[in-house]
Image (cartoon, rainbow, N blue to C red; front, side, top):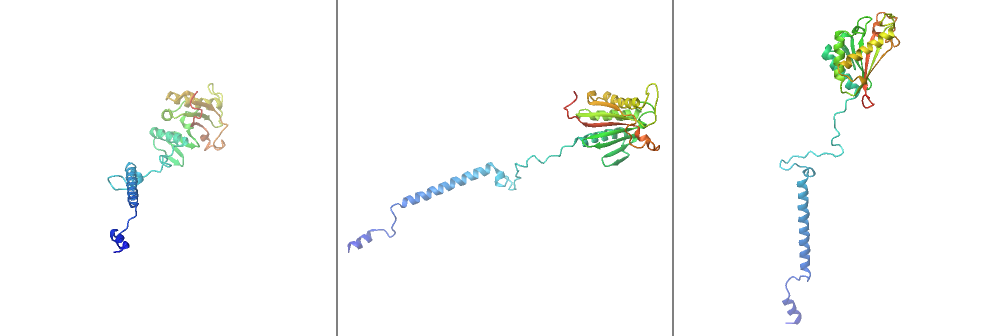
Length: 243
C-alpha cells in the first residue's frame, strides 16, 4: 500500500478544522446573550405593563396615558361674572321665588328685582317699588332679598358698588332737600342692609346720582318709574381684598 493510501486510511471521513471548538463556543455565547436580553426584556415588561399594552392577569388592553395631556381635562373654571350672577339668581329665587321671566343672562323677579350679568360681574337692580314713595326705607320683602343676596356674596372676594337713582320729579323735604340726598340715602340703606347681613363694610361703596342717569326718557310718564332704582354692582376684587 502506498504512503498516500495509508494517510487516507488513517484520517476520519469528515475533516474538521483545528479551530472548530472556537466556533461552537462562539455560538454558545451568542445563545446565552440572546437569552439574557430576552429575560431582561420580559422583566421590563412585567414592571411596566402599560408598555406591553396589557394588564397582567386579565389579558385586556391597558389604558395608557399621554403625559402631555394627563390632568389637563378639567372642568373649566367658572368666570366671575357667571359666579356672581348665579349666586344672585339663586339667593333671590330662594327668597322671592322662581324668576317671572328670563332673557339670556337676565332674570326678572317679583318685588321689582332684576339680575343681569355684566362682563366679569353682575348687576342687581331694585326697582322703585322696593322703597316707599319719598323714603329711603326698604320694604320688608326687599330687605329680606337684599340680606339673602349679601349672605350669598360673603367670602366671594368681591367688590360691591351701590348706586341710587331717581326720576326727575323734584323732592324738597327736611330730610331730602333734593333727589341727590334721596338717591344717596337709598344707596346707603341698601349698603347698610348688606353690612348687617355679614358683608365686610370695607368691600362696599355707595353713591347717589339723583336723576342724572335715567334709563328711559323722563317725559314718558308710563315708563319713567324705571328710573327710580338702586343698582348693586358686584365685581371681583382685583386688589386682593378689603384694606
